[in-house]
Image (cartoon, rainbow, N blue to C red):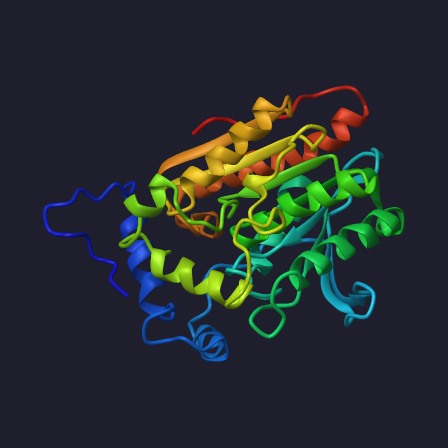
Length: 339
């Protein structure tokens, strides 16, 4: 996989970001190139060096299993509890978090620091979901697991010490796709109620035709070749990339969806489809805030110890999550900023 720029091309990454991109690209499997087997890709990632930064501290962490969809296996989840508030306040917000990884890689451990950070910074209960991965369990398995997890959290929020009326679905990349899709399903199925959707560089259009897909096809960590390979694993040879539960940007009706916060990175193949999704929501009257980072790459959200833009993005997301409780008390606003 190439990470170097074409001769004469301008590197649009923000200062400091190129070193991060090159470092993570050096240990990332050459998906769709020399690595075409998902199990091999996971083995390569498992052997990569761990991040050298201390994990954010939370009050408690519990691994458990919750019921899966009918006829499907139980779903492993990891539950993070925030430190008790200094004063007796309302119940904490609760976040159902879906990790990224193209629906093929990633797990509870790969996004442990992210989930911990959201728990700590937003004062939220976070339930991270280890949904089934492709190609062993192709579409719609991940979607079915994601919706089952949201239903379970909504039903059990109170016993977790959280406010069921302050439920956020959140995820990055493929996880952002799942968060968006379950928001549609919850609306169409009459519940559960979702207060916010937080979509971090979400995959919203599997046709992969947006301008940024070509402009950022190579050189910024996530490549067009990676994206094609992920789609092939997720959908199989006969899958429909235009299915609304694969490409939520293509649904006919966006009205009545939860308020959204969308994070995009300018050097990301998925940038334009993320921004288009935010606009489609806004056009349907859904309240939307955006955090835009023109000099960042796909995956930057996971590096707050190294990148100021990642810290800003995390702070914006934490504010949006925390606002769900304030909104229940008729105070505060949606938060977020345009970066």
